[in-house]
Length: 439
Image 1 (cartoon, one colour):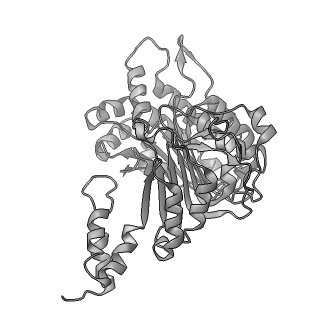
Image 2 (cartoon, one colour):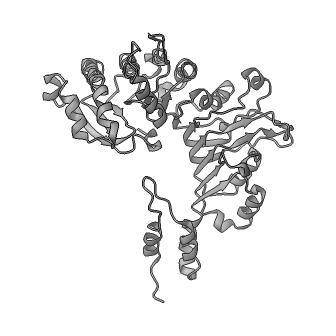
Image 3 (cartoon, one colour):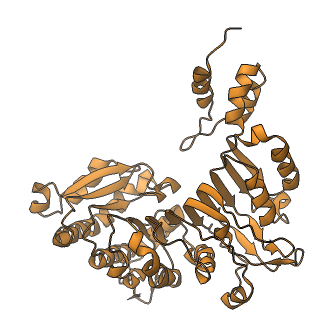
């Protein structure tokens, strides 16, 4: 049999992927079959087989720990670990994750760079085990819709603890699902019994990407009560503003402590206040303080991204009985941010407009266009505060042709903004996906 060099085998195996749109994944069964062809293929194929490992919560994690401890060569290939639970699968219920066991597994993976816990029920730290003094270093840490059950009757010998303190991750993403996160316990109880890890998390990029920000902020608030984050390391912050209470914590407590080092910020404007009896309540953005972000270099302001939230915007907008449309609220929040930010280092400003469906994108854009024009004019008027800002970019979701959307905006822009090339128009294919977290 002709032998291919390892470089060519790598190219071949990299292209054995599913044909699903969006984020194609490697086809692990096919790669496993390739690993059984010969020794040369096995050495290369196993790297891809074990590169990303996904485990459901009903798996025997102690058996998996024994495997990675015994097969160190294979364990060294694992770069990403995802543990997940299907909320609608009865076989997945009743299988909480013990954090001490998870820590032992991660400690046995020398090449681990990414960890994601999705819909997992997380227990407290066992009383019989001391907290580790050394953190697990990661590139990316994602908690998606996890539940913390510190008072489990089945596992009563455990304590609350700061789970963020177990990791040193460059990027931390905290998100929740639509169903919410039950099991959050009162702060007073946490203050009495929270176990404190020795090390302080050093996070460079923090993404709070949920339409249920209070639950998402819970882990961050637990950490904030005690040691907090390492000062001076946080440079990127992405928020989905969907709760006044949570934003009050972020803007009043969090940003004043860590905002000085933040250089890049992305805000997805949810309808955080709601509309009731034709009254517009104050938006959470009014809590933002100019002095909290003295060195901000790039700012991205976006309409709500999640399909459910965007559909809700359209449903509310269909009723003429309200004095203010939801787009008024979103645009008003963006205006408050632009009025508040005073960083002379700001050099990049963009406005993002995602859409749900191609069929409704044009109609939705027609309603949003006047608000976008108003924001662009406001940005031009504020240019004297931002000497490094040369232009503003309007980014549209892929569901609409960028030229169609641009014409809707250009037709309402003042002539001066069109002449000096202050406004630019682009398509962002990831604006409606989780990839849009990054600036």
